[in-house]
Image (cartoon, rainbow, N blue to C red; front, side, top):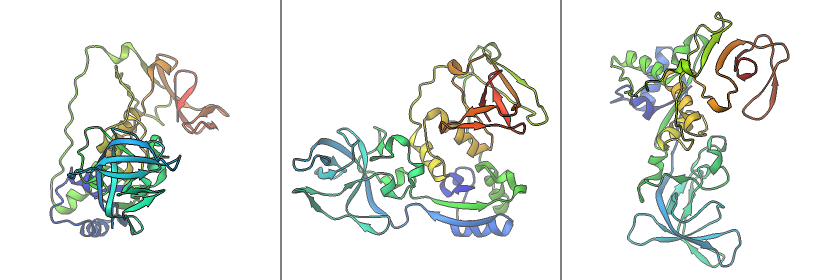
Length: 322
């Protein structure tokens, strides 16, 4: 279990607790903290820049010449080879004098005859594992939401000023496999209160039962399954704060619908799955054990063969999830 120190602070007052002190107290209470990772350790000088202009480098087909506002009096010219860089974007800029992972220092340079005053960065260049980078940015630079503040600290915006504690959980401590569970543990250790997340939503007058029914055939394996209908959803990126929480927890962001289910799983320990109602194939959810040699195509587009031991969520006939 990867526990973000900054995220944990939202539930428990950690005043006076450095990550090291907190890790020692958690370990002494019975849950071993196997390590602490400081996400942005050693990095500095990375800001949010606004790409004002972009044109092809006059002497290189695969390079772009960009004019970038980095929050100073004058914009700077930066040569960038990322295929997705474009005018109007908010991007992470390692300024001249910045230090990136591996003690890589950014200097003023000349690339194919054009001056470059810094570097527009991908998430990988900021130390984030490639498997955690959203797919749309896997082969290029990361683009911040349009309302990101030009000149602001990019490392802070990406939650790379965080420390992540890795808990070595034993099977009897499933209660600590979510952030609120860890918060309860830490609050008990420190003698402090747990601050619950604020929740507020407005339910419509319609009933979910008018759209979908739920039938559980194996109540011993699955005592409860509940469903809600959410209308008028527009698929898009989740908020940056949610994406960075997921990344620091070791989960790759996908889109707002997938990300919120993973976020709730991390926060409460409650598994969720979102289905596209129009593509689900029926108006009923049936939970049962799989048939022998029944198959399902998983998110990686691989066909998997199931056994009688697998519990599946179906649309009444075909498995939709395991």
